[in-house]
Length: 180
Image 1 (tube, rainbow, N blue to C red):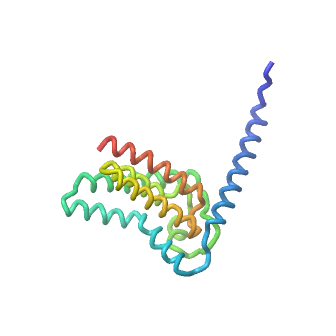
Image 2: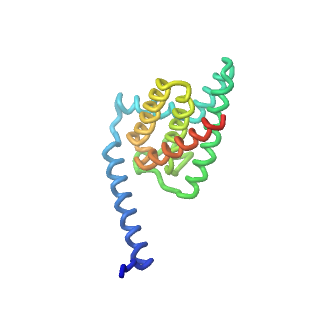
Image 3: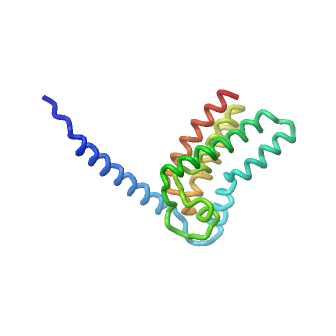
């Protein structure tokens, strides 16, 4: 006869596994973080900001003004839909950002890190803009990865934050690409 674990022992095992995964996430994120000031950190800050929502609102307005209403509409839906979804998830999880340099805009306006809105936004944009050509899909996908890794390297997010954000963004991007 097969003996099933008790609910208490199964829950204990799950907690142990989650604690180990979080420890690995913290260790990987710490190894990827660049703390010293310099040219590399400055470049990473520029890359990280290319995923800002305000940047993409401006891009959407620009696309609309030059006569590309469909891509502009997709892009604006992504920005606003993901802002709401990410805000709700951050409120639910309330995961604190990695310890590190404080006083930056990220820490003052949004103390929670899970999931990464920047990773979600850039991944969704890669999916939707990528429907127009494989080259755009590859380019935007690489850009999304760079933005995500820059945010980990700057100590703004843990690796799991950007991974979850990317998965969320790919899902939302696929839905938007299928509908619009």
